[in-house]
Image 1 (cartoon, rainbow, N blue to C red):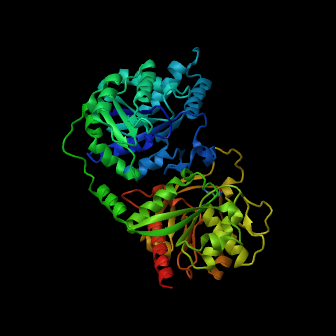
Image 2 (cartoon, protein in one colour):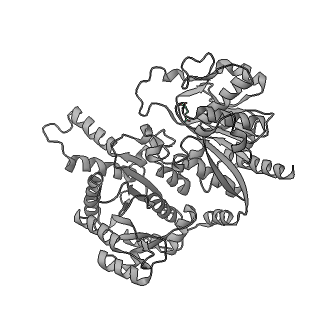
Image 3 (cartoon, helix red, strand yellow):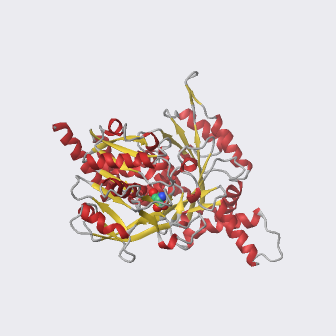
Length: 540
Ligand code: GLN
C-alpha cells in the first residue's frame, strides 16, 4: 500500500516500561477497527539475532513460523494480534551492519566511504519500510529497543527523524516514559519525562504522543504540565496505569483514547469503536476465574521467568479458557533430586518440564519426569522436556542403563536422543538449528489427536537433537508411543504413554502459537487434565 503509515515507539527514563505491550495494545486497537497492522522490533545490539543469547541475558528466544529466532516481544505481538510475524518483524543492529558490510564487499558502494549516516541509517529505513511496501500493511508500528539517550540506539532515532521528515503525516512517534510517585512528598514527578523528551528533541525528534507509565492516576494538572513542557496536545498525554494483567492494557489505552489520537495524527478515518468482543470475553473469564490449578514449571532459568514467557502465557490462556487461575510454581531443576522430588512436587496438579540446552539441571528434570510418570500426575514435556521423558523411560522402564541424549553424554551406550542427520556437519551456532514450522501427522486415538481434533498440524521447532527411531519399537512395546511424526522425514514429534492419565511430550514448541483468541489445544488439554487430577486429589 503506497500510503502505509508508520508509528514509532520509543522509550525514555528507564528500560522495562513495557514498550512491547503498549505497541501490541495499540496494534490490537487499530486491528479491531479493521486496519491491517503489524509490529516490528528493532534491537540495538550487535548479535545478528537473539538465538545465540543465553536466556538470562534477554529472556526467551521467540521463534516465528518462518524460522526466525527473535525477541520475546514478538511473542506479545502474536498473542495480541493473532497473526504470525516473520523475520522482517525483528531486526538487530548486527543484522543491519551485516547487510551493509555484505553490500560493501559486493561492491555496491564502490568508490564511497561507507558511513553510519547515510548507509546504516538507510539500511534501517529500508527494513522499516519493507513491511509496508512488501507486506502491504496499513500501519506498521516499529518499537525501538533500548532507552533514548543510549549510544546504541542513536542511529535508529536518526532514522526515525529522517522518516518523519520524509513521510510527514504518515509517520509519528509515541514516547513512553515513567512518572514516578514519591511517597515521601505524596507527588507524581514529571521531571524525568521532561528530561527524556528533551533528549529526544536534542536529536531532532518531537514526539507526537506521550504515554506515561504510572502507579497512580495522573491529575489534570500533571497532564497539563507534561503537555506544556513537552509541546504536545493534552489529549496526546496518555496515562498507562499499572494493571494486574497485560491483556487489560488495550482496554485501558482505548479508554485513554490512544487509538483515536493516533488515527487523527496519521490522518486516517476515526469511525465507530474498536470491535473487542472476543477480547473482552477473555478478560471477563480471566477476572472471574475463582478456582485455581497448581502447575509446576520445571526448568533451569526459573530465576528469570521471562525465559519461559510464552509457556507461562500459554498456561494462562489455557487456565482462563478452562475457567481456572493458574497457580504457577517455578521449580529449579538444579535443586531437584530423587530424594527431595516428592516433597517439592507432591502438591502439584500438573508438571511441565521446560525446553533448554546443555546438561545443567538435567538430572532434576529426569527426577521430575519419573515422579510424574510413576505417580500418574499430568505431564507435559516441551522440546528438551520431551527428550527428558524419553531418556527417563529408557533408563527406568527399558532398563537401558546410562541412556541419554548425545547432547548430554556424547559416549552414551544408548543414544535414545541423537543428533539429527542434517545437523552432523553443522559447526556454526547462529541460526543453524531445525527452526520454524514443520508439519506433524497425528496418530488417531491419542491424547494429542483428541486435543487437536485434526490429522495434520503445523508446529514450530528449535532444536538439534531428535528421538532416535532405532529405539522406537522397544519404546512402543513397553508403553511409550509415537503420537505424531513428520510426514516427510518420519521424525518422532510427539510421545505419549497411553496408560498414564495424561503424559505427553512434544519435540516442538506449542507455546509459540498460543494466542488470546486462539489458546493452544495441547495447553488446553494439559491444563484440563491437571484440573481433573486436582479434583481427584481432593476427593481422595
Ligand atoms: N537441547 C535440545 C536440542 O537441541 C532441546 C532444545 C529445546 O528445548 N529447545 O535438541
